[in-house]
Length: 282
Image 1: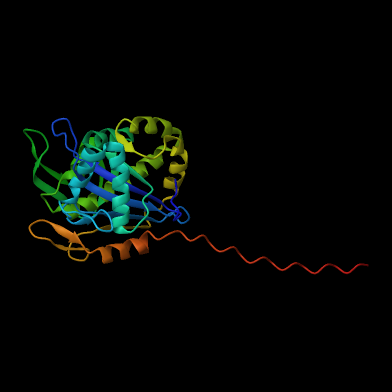
Image 2 (image 1 turned 180 degrees about the vertical axis):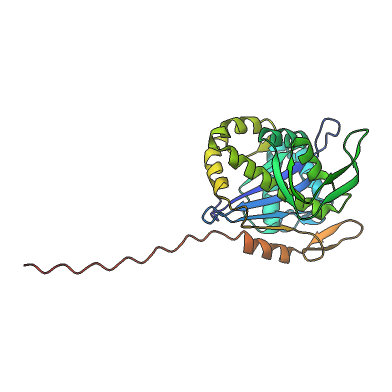
C-alpha cells in the first residue's frame, strides 16, 4: 500500500459522468499524500483548464487536462486508463502515486449520505446565484463558518464556481475531502466493512479491499489540522496559455511536491548505550 517513498499517495478523480451526460471529464484532479510516521497531510489540485500536461519525457496532452482520463478510456479501457492516469499525473508533478480512485456525481451523493454527511468550515460565504439546483430552483448559498452538508449539498459545494472561480472551487473540493475523511474516522473501524462494500459500487479504484483496515489505520492517524494544500493556478504555479487555458510551471510545481510530499526518511536509530562495567568479583 505504501510507496517506495514510505508515503501513501492517492490520485482522486472526480468524473462528470451521469446517465444524462455519459462523459468522463475530470474537473477534479487531486493528489493527496499522507506521511504515516508524522500524520502530516498534503493535497495538490491540478486545475481543469491546464493544457500541455506532460504524458512522457517527450509527449504532452495539448487539450485541457480534464479530458485526459476520458481520452485514455477510449484508447485502453477504464482499468488501464486509471493506472495510466496515475503514472502520468505522478510523473508530471514529481511524486510517486500509489493508487487512484474515481467517483462520479451519484457516488459523491451516496457516499456522503452513507457517512452521515460531512462538515466543512468556510472562511467566507460562497454565493452562486446562477447554479441550477433543479429545473425550477436557481442559486445556492453557503454561509461562512461551519456547514454540515448532505449528499446533494456536498455535490453542489464541489461543483459551484460562478460565485468565484475554478481555483476557489478546487480549494473547496479539498475541504470536502478532508471533511469526508473526518466523517469516516468518526464512524470508527466497526463501520468500515459496510462502507467498503458500499464504496465498491460507486468508486473505481486499484486500492485492494483486503487492505481497507490498514488504510483506515493510516487515515485515522492523519493530522488534518497539520496539512498543506495548494491549487496549481496562476500566476505562481501556472501561466496563461490563451483564453481560459493555463500551462503549469513544472519547476515550481515539482519544488512544492518535493517539499510537502517528500519521501519519508526513517528516524535514525538511537546510539546504543555503552555496556556497564562488570562488577568486580568478590
